[in-house]
Image (cartoon, rainbow, N blue to C red; front, top):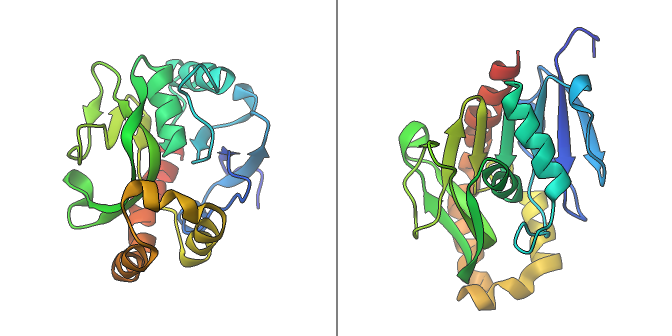
Length: 213
């Protein structure tokens, strides 16, 4: 890719990292993927922080929170997804807490994504930072999506595709029961809503890429 493309750092947290539909939506930027490391802010034009098994609860991920806080202060575009949204909320003064019950569900979205559904596989939830603009209605009292300056956090997974989701069932199928969901019901919902995820990724990651450019 030509060197004059803007550079976006992608921070992965999963043991099975993936970009899914985000790869196509971010086609007009140069991606530098980080696995267990953090980028130098001077080297990038934007940051995407994706989901993972770690938690902000208990004081984790403080180095990443500091990076995202500085990025926002410098007006560098940031997109946080699931865990990434929680780190971003925490970095900007919001609050991350353990949900009383795991959430595994497709949730209807509002606002700019009206008519789309966002997939949740969440143990934690967040309260957006003070002054943040909430971009979608809250499904259960916890924040769903917010914007602060040029930073956006979404609790759901617009990037998920069928291959990634199959890996989740294999690795973390044991979270379904605590969420009160059977695998059969979860897969029925997947079949209904997965076809819409490419368009949702284009809307969210594509908008981020345009912000970077």
